[in-house]
Length: 324
Length: 315
Image (cartoon, rainbow over all chains, first blue to last red):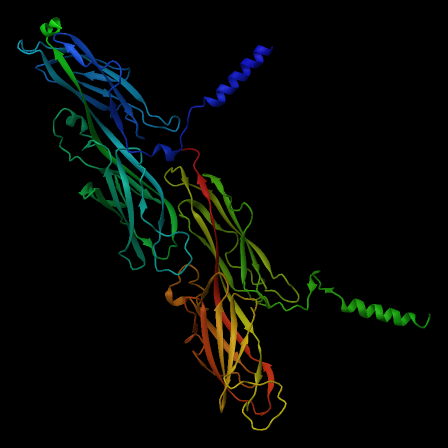
């Protein structure tokens, strides 16, 4: 009886302390990382003999807030020196697909159920080719590139004041929204500035948002649909950069491919000192007599991203090894 | 003893008559001067209406208690309305005032028959609150504004000395020094107060300087902005009051500014205003005290705010 009670108590205690950490939207949409490549400390070969097979492990982790789906997966591309190393095969987890020196993989980002995104482990099996007889060793580099489509989502409360000169007591004051913690992706929106412009009708105003973003990661920008070509070293037909996938506030919106009552220009965002910039204008007027009000503003950026990691391996001559 | 009991009865009756009495509604009738304080309307959100947090998809009520803490009006002539704003109208589905947003005309001010002033509760009902395009939460700050007509009446007792520099020595009821006289006033049961009156006497006229101040927490608005207040006010609509000043024998003095709709008294950034009025002298040459009646008419704008959080639990 006592043992049963003790066991029950232990179960209850572990249930209390082992509750998986859950996340609010604020924690999910923070940080400046997307998909990150890393090489594990263990199992990484430093030296191999010519003619020998060897394995290079790779960890792929989605540390951002966007999930790579099966329909638009990430791509890991292997680059080796074909004179020195021969590609044999991949060892990939379920769900990933390999084709030659490329692996396509879906990978979940941070979610409400789990603050940590999904982590995946790949292994590539290579074979060191014979090196010149006159050499004791040759160094070669194994390079992994990851190319993936990503999105950055920005959600804040914004104050819309159609009549800044009005003498009424206002519920809010428009201000430039600034972000320093990132939104869960390597491209982060750093500033959203609001302007109130005269409308076509004298009683109306048009609201314009100037959106500024920065590449806070260490990688390169690609197009969010042409990204696999970039991994293969080819140019796509569409211009790489940061695109507005969606912007919405109150009941006004713009969606890429569908348009709406907000127009953004230029797209992709124009490169300026320190980052990227675009302007989104509400084409429908808001009545000047509307009192200032707070409303949610949602901006979603779409882009492709490429990061690279490499590992140096020394190929030893067999004769040199024997002499050691 | 038998002869004295009618006297005792009469004494008892007199004593009870002189004690506190009540009107038909049971409210105490007070001899106290009710024209005190610096408030007009008091606005308060009723507890949990609106709540601090509400779930998207729910209905919501905003209940506002309106109490007339000032001294105007003393008849069923109240003229004012409420407006609510600060939220995105797309997020509040089918929202509206129960009945009307106009405050009842029966909201009288404090008086000897109603020392607390009139009270009313207005309800703004929303059928459904949302967070717009599925956002996790929405935090608007609701503002309820009351814009209402109000009046300040100040009746300081002033000294009238038509001949302040007479050679003959007489026992005057009151005197005006050579450099003039100043009267400080306390509040008059309204958010705009007459704070000071200065008096000077010239050869032919009596001159009064009247200092006016916004002593409340809100904003003074032109009396003629009934439709524009509070949502369409511009710079020319604020800090303007109409002033009428009278003495018993002169009801139309020359004032600067005139104090009428065409030339109102303007309050500065700190809420202070001034009007200078010149009266004719009375026919009598003796000094005496009388009431200087000052009436200030305006609209007043009071607001209260509350931030609420609408949470989308279906995200």
